[in-house]
Length: 278
Ligand code: NDP
Image 1 (cartoon, rainbow, N blue to C red):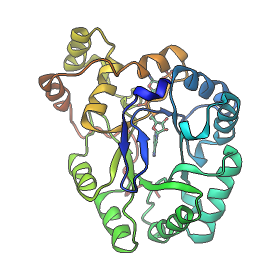
Image 2: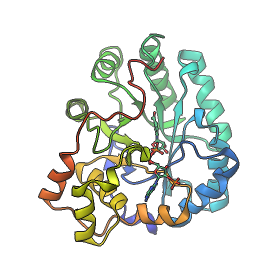
Image 3: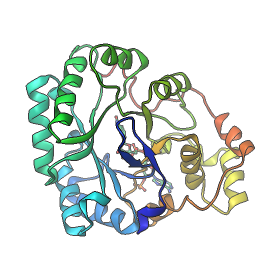
């Protein structure tokens, strides 16, 4: 089975997540079924979607059509900002499950803290109930800074299984990632390729590692994530790039190649700062 050689990471609740998956942000809802079918065909077994992407139905149709047993798939979705709160979170997971055509998701995330609403701690306690009800096997957060993580840990009994944050060579958030890991929260890197907004693929350290291993710059950047222990799900609409991005398990970057890519840190955020996204 294709997934058998994708490494998995153990989450703090004992479940395992495939370290390499496929993301569907900005995948056109009309095209999602076909694109996710292509991704499953390429070997991906971990799909990352969100209510706000508007494409959960397409993800669900592709899964149903694939015939792949449910226990071989790992599906993540996320609660959008306007659904923060207790009853609205319960309604949001039911709506997502209905659209996905699933009884449960493997991972359910609060998409953004939206600190001005001041509802993320209450929402987190609702996610604890959603997990207890069996509607999500694991629960986590996204775009949470250290202060947000500290608050929900102080006000609940559950440490998030993951924090999904913007992370790529130009924005490594080292303090946040080491704090999260120190409490047992795994790091998922969104925008792992910098969303194409930084010329990462032209950086000398990336290009020379690619040449040394006979790989593409994108493959080198994905490999850099995997060797740092990040969970990644690069997105592509194109089948040839899906295959390229999945073909990263047969080479290892040297310590000096890793250090050369580490040196690309420049606080280069391409998305909104989590404290400012309300
Ligand atoms: P990525 O860093 O994965 O970049 C995607 C872009 O890179 C697309 O334009 C794609 O173009 C291009 N690309 C993909 N593969 C290659 C390649 N091999 N060579 C050259 N270009 C390539 O950005 P995303 O924002 O999509 O991040 C990945 C996932 O993270 C999302 O799909 C989503 O699941 C999640 N995410 C979560 C967020 C959150 O707030 N929690 C925010 C943003 C993303 P093309 O499609 O034309 O190939």
